[in-house]
Amino acid sequence: MAVAISTSGNSENVLEGAREAKKAGAVVIAWTGQGGGKLKALADVCLEVPSRRTSRIQEGHLAMLHVLCAIIEDELFPAVPKASGY
Image 1 (cartoon, rainbow, N blue to C red):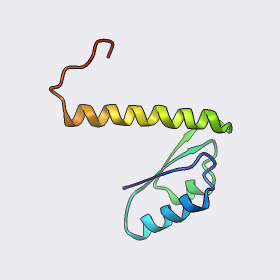
Image 2: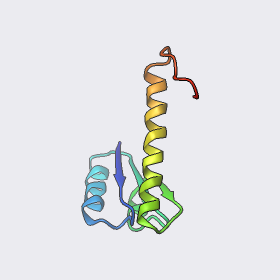
Image 3: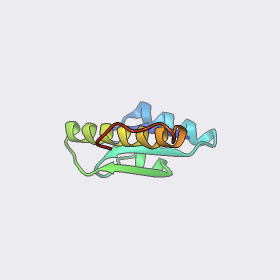
């Protein structure tokens, strides 16, 4: 699996990485802004933050990263007690 992150979906280095990942047989998951850019067509899954404003897109990506980390942590360490508020 490869995660390709680009606010515009058009960053050439990220597009090249996604192409190489596909050649290697990896599933490509893209994190982009609204529309997905060129990256959307290369990805197996494209998670779009519904904004065209770079700062909002990056904030959305950060929130997605925190949720992903929480899910992984719960899967790897289910018996560890959670802090209050969760």
